[in-house]
Amino acid sequence: MSTTVWVPCDAAAVSVGADAVAEAFAAAGVTVRRNGSRGMLWLEPLVEVETDRGRVGYANVEPTDVAALLAGGLDDTDRCVGVVDEHPWLVRQHRVTFARVGVVEPTDLAAYRAHGGLAGLERALTLSGEQVVAEVTESGLRGRGGAGFPAGIKWDTVRTASADLKFVCCNADEGDSGTFADRMLIEGDPFTLIEGMAIAAVAVGATEGFVYLRSEYPHAVRTLRRAIEIAYAHGLLGASVLGSGRRFDLDVRVGAGAYICGEETSMLDSLEGKRGEVRAKPPIPALQGLFGRPTVVNNVLTLSAVPMVLADGGAAYAALGTGRSRGTQVFQLAGNVARGGIVEADFGIPLRELVEDFGGGTASGRPVKAVQVGGPLGAYLPPSKFDLPTDYEEFAAADAMVGHGGIVVFDDSMDAGAMARFAMEFCAKESCGKCTPCRVGSTRGVEVIDRIRAGTQRDANLVLLEDLCATMTKGSLCAMGGLTPMPVRSALEHWPEDFGVEPATANRATDAMPESATSTHGGARP
Image 1 (cartoon, rainbow, N blue to C red):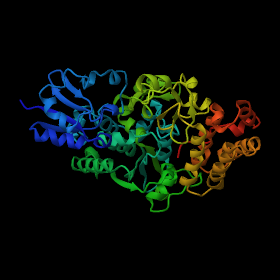
Image 2 (image 1 turned 120 degrees about the vertical axis):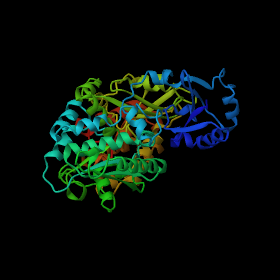
Image 3 (image 1 turned 60 degrees about the horizontal axis):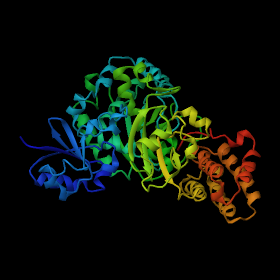
Image 4 (image 1 turned 180 degrees about the vertical axis):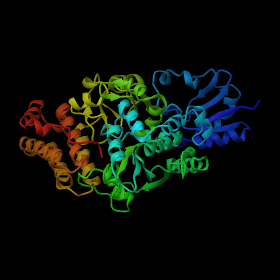
């Protein structure tokens, strides 16, 4: 009986030599299958060997390890992690969206079906659009791109709009630092996204769809395009989805690397062949979106949760999570962290459990100083805040945001003042330039922070910085400028010494502003 090994084709694994490992196994005469990554990125390349006990994993495999591995020479070493499905890091998770990632070959449609795929779409095709939307509404599913807007409300707005043409657009322009779940899902289980978009089309009456995918993800672009070809060949897409008589065509459009195109209206401009700029609202995209037609715009994780919602029912999904944050979130651990990767868990899991238990603290072994949650515009949180439950409302009350679920860890060598400056500098570089608070405010923000750190009229510049932050929060056209003050304020609040400021001075500057000026409810991530 021939040996079968699984070697990840995920970009993270490929970046550390997975392709060379696969070639070495093939040269040794074994059957090689390529899967997505299990999300335990510190173990990559993680090779799995099929055995009677299940798929046994071997960590950090190199081409020179192949002969020893096949001969059993690694079985009694710490390189052998046992049956992968029984690994404590995976067992403690609740994988819903990522249930098949790392388990099947990404473009194996038969395996996708065998592991529960298409059950949601098949059920959706037996329901009316109104009934499908009702299931999504009951599930409590909210936008996973960062805004947390209820998906059911958005879908129903598109469904009830009158138009000759409607669209479903997936924003896969995953530009936040420390985020990679969209990429990993597309590279590891693209049919989940395709199925979710087809269900959305059935629900709202759309006939065309686009995935806006960043050019920095060539592996994901290639995998998704191949999966779409297979979907057409098997009747999942096209003139009659699964023989239902309902049309849905889907295509991939590759973005050019503008962070602002993570904001839905900028993405729509880019899809139309224009420069990506934020549009004023109203009108909202659900009524006048792509080419002026009603458009569903959701991100990868939102649409990829939909198949489970339809397969098991909205009530089953709503039973997961906490408060108004229902279902699961795919958290991404990155930065200076010992065990980086994907953790899918019910909303409400404490931040401490993610950072210390799953993440294992810092890779450097030094104490954790801060984590930034929600991308480059998210707040910096100190260990004293780590008992915060991962819940949209709880984070908002703490002047922070869950965002896309990215968690970047920093040890005690971090300079919070430098990171605050980076937030303003990042905004200045990535702003579309359409509104003054964002375009000019971020540039002035860099200058003011430089003066504070240099000790130049520090008290006056602290007040000026807070005034500038208030203007950006309240006056920016979108969340690009509206959220940039969040990391700045949090860095100054928790680590004033990194700005050369006494804690009491920093507190006085913040307290001097009215409550509305320090609100962080300025919108979602772009």
